[in-house]
Length: 185
Image 1 (cartoon, one colour):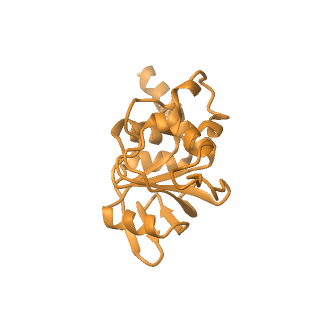
Image 2 (image 1 turned 180 degrees about the vertical axis):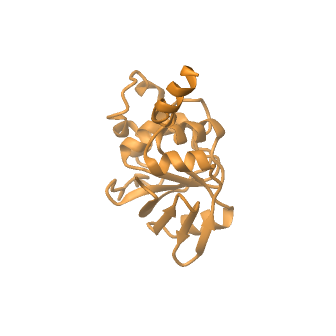
Image 3 (image 1 turned 90 degrees about the vertical axis):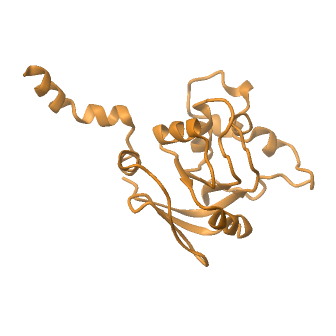
């Protein structure tokens, strides 16, 4: 059971990060979730950026479990491998001003928390890398030291599943006794 995600943030100050950038198509040949983290942001992690630094230099999956990204995160084609790769890389939440609907749905179904905050809060985070954040899933808030506590939208069922560490099928299976009694009537 996880009510909080407490972690340093890791910044990816890029807008319009699409699912092909999260996990390139050549790595979609499996339905296994494990091992996809090595391909997450593959090109950005393997190739130097314009300033000859790797975008992910300094990333530590034990310390950085919250990704803060530019606007429109997870856009592009629908691929469930994207949240799988992020989770396998060590992330438990993604914060942005806008998260693509299909990515958001896939993330929630797989236990990755998509957090949409206002532009002012995200700008603050992007300007202050490696901030010690505390996300309270039940209260639907992010405590940002030096800024303030900010609320984010999340439906009750998704919050329940994230806190309990279950998915939709697990939830339905937990109601097996009720289903059996209903069918018997």
